[in-house]
Image (cartoon, rainbow, N blue to C red):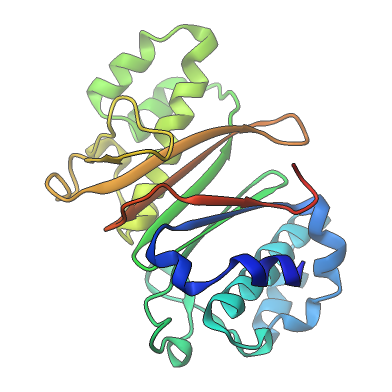
Length: 253
């Protein structure tokens, strides 16, 4: 695992495009269980606080893999990497490590089910990952997530495609919210996404949030996990010219 990460997590490569790392928890759990010494005392306490083993495993994998990636990009020993909570409880690299040339390294982490996505860039980035699934309270979801035009278009969608299109919107807005640094404090019904976001191929303009004239790369991809879940992966980043490169578990095709 270390060799694979160190070969690909190279800071200079982020000057050309952002990176998205995709992991399946089942594939890397044994490895991460042997790295619990990388948790800080606060992280170890949080790890033990989870009632369910699945949540413990997810937290451990997210934190260990994130630290290993940061260490590789910044060319540090992984033991030196420290993650703190910033504004809005957003995880960030500790200030004492934020030095040139890696001082502008940004990351975003998302987990859904057994899958983890971690994005890295040299500018603000947002990544969101969600299992496509059905909910019963459709009206409430549309009211909280969509503009009036978006909700109207979704209601006209066929039942077969409704949830797929809904999660394109939801993950896209989550990624944008993370990229602009506001997270869930943003009212998702206050801004709209392009009607057909690209598949990591071109920049899109997001209306609302004061972003109307600033290019924001927004891409979405649809994957099937080994557990046969359909997942929607969204990525948003500023000032960036190429589609992201996606790295997946070395044990996965």
